[in-house]
Amino acid sequence: MKKVGLTGGIGSGKSTVARMLADEGFVVVDADQIAREIMEPGSPVLEEVAEVFGADLIGEDGQLDRAELARRAFASKESTERLNGITHPAIRAESERRFAAAEQAGEQAVIYDMPLLVDLGLHTTMDLTVVVGVDVDERVRRLVDKRGLDVADARARVAQQVDDSTRLAAADVVIDNNGPLDALAPQVAALVEKIKDL
Image (cartoon, rainbow, N blue to C red):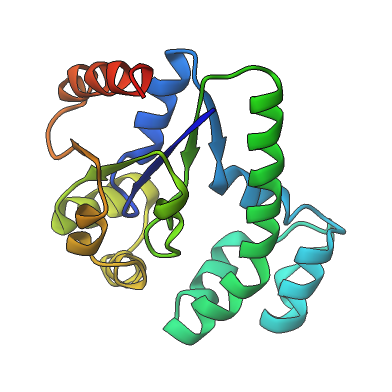
């Protein structure tokens, strides 16, 4: 089974590309979704996060205040690394479990939707690395318009990730998502053919 790593900076539209690939019938292993699942109420990962970043992050219903955790975790590189040190091993273990399940089910290829694929050096374990590229200013605008972040917070989150030139240098395929949504379809169609040929 081939592993296709799909990545892009925050606000790049990587999730849109992942949905389009899922619509083409590919199994998508979504690292962000796994990250949410490992923080469910009562999980050991959530307990460790609360220990490090503050018990007040957990509401009376046991749910994590994700927005406040993000604010604290992205405040500095050190705090981001501290959070990653807690969550990444659990995300990696669950991702591997899902890869194995897809292989057992006879899938020819699996898409690994992973924002930090290049940051963590995981692109070296993929058969194909796909980067969704969008200019930084456009990504910031989308984060402000679509996610309601203020400009400073949006820029801080972009700055916490590996720079675009490093991410693009790791790409086997670059999807340009600076334009309108309908410009994605032909690029994704070409990518589908490339994956089938792996």
